[in-house]
Image (cartoon, rainbow, N blue to C red; front, side):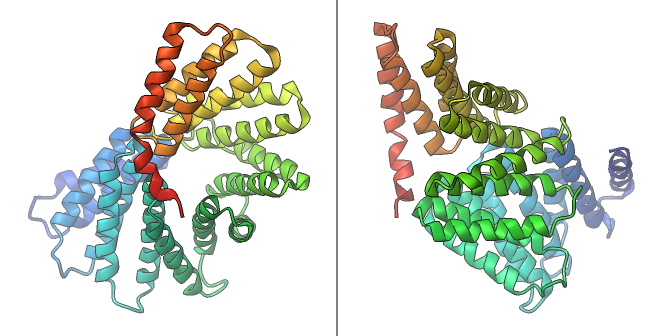
Length: 385
């Protein structure tokens, strides 16, 4: 982190010292944006991301249309927009990321190695938009571009294949969630296993790839009732959590995943210790996530579900009350994925209606949240095949 701070300081000094019309100012702005973005990924400060985006936008503005560095600078700007979308859930940022990346792809000559890489980046952005809007064409195009990227990379000839495989696996898993075809899930698993195998221990991407492999194994366990998939899913995710620093921005997602896996094992074994540990992990994920983060809705919903499972076992009214509160909090995050919000509203309403202490006020709350949730259903119906 000390080296990163030094790099940011050097880049800021270079930009500050350069006159507005200096021929290298655009390049220094671009470099500063990249460095600030790396610091954001490590420390999670939205201020760094906003600054990175601002510097990148200025760099692109100062770069002539026919300049050889324009595609690379547009690529960086696109990735900064995508990062801000991931942090704030603003769909306009994702649309801007896609627009910039499409411009980059169009500027890079056919046959240039950068064109394939940029297609991979565009693939990821389109997949993200599919997750938000349910537009199947975005997902199909994302898969096509990801496959092109992998096929264009000679085996053993590039350090990028693990990333490419991991990305294609993510897209195929999204397709499985849409199609329920085990063939799609098996293809996603194959990509994830290959990505993990190709990633050295200690690599920054090792932990998230292990966790992703755990997610796919759990999906196969649930779909095919293959008990042999459950323990590896938990073990891979536990390793991912154990090898991720406590202050890392990505740790919350890993904690959530581990909590979900343990909760799933509880459903099979009825071991309350598993459920209690699951609740602790998901609660930690919620605490580690900023209140306005789109992913927080998913963690809150999972926290509510785990608490409700314990309530059904112990009949502790405190768990029921807290579960309902978590579902309402999840519903109340406007930047969260639509289906998560609708599901949270439904769970909260059902819990209220079937509560032993149901009051007229509870019934009104249940009716109100369901009424509001129905207005979001048309936005989710495009997800059907």
